[in-house]
Image 1: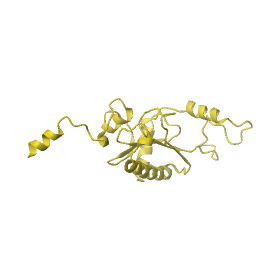
Image 2: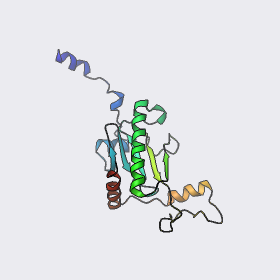
Image 3: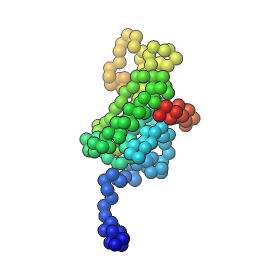
Image 4: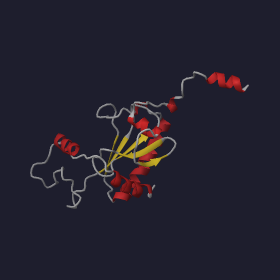
Length: 177
């Protein structure tokens, strides 16, 4: 009986829920083949710090299953990702003391890695001179930046994530999960 069951699984296509793409950066992180600063992980989702953050705390929430488009994400996996986004966002706001967030998910357009993922990006803080982002014109600017100029300046201000700073922030966030 057991051999019959085993033979029925030989050369069988893997279940879609086991889908991985060895060329995908996020799949490699999920598999442990590429490094990442993990903030959160469960059976279906991981959350990591972005290696090229827009601002400190910029986090990616990624389903472990390789699915390229949000519109193709099964409802049960979308629910798991949504729970993780909410949980990580709460911990991130507590760890950074910044309740302003931007949560974004791109599909094809502006999607650098073709694997569904949400960005949780802390908002810039303009009211405290110590925390003002140097590449962003303060709100009191005489000539406000256009949306395109703001995006360009934010992109240009990105720096590679410092490992030591990542570990400190990760510990603060994990302590709140």
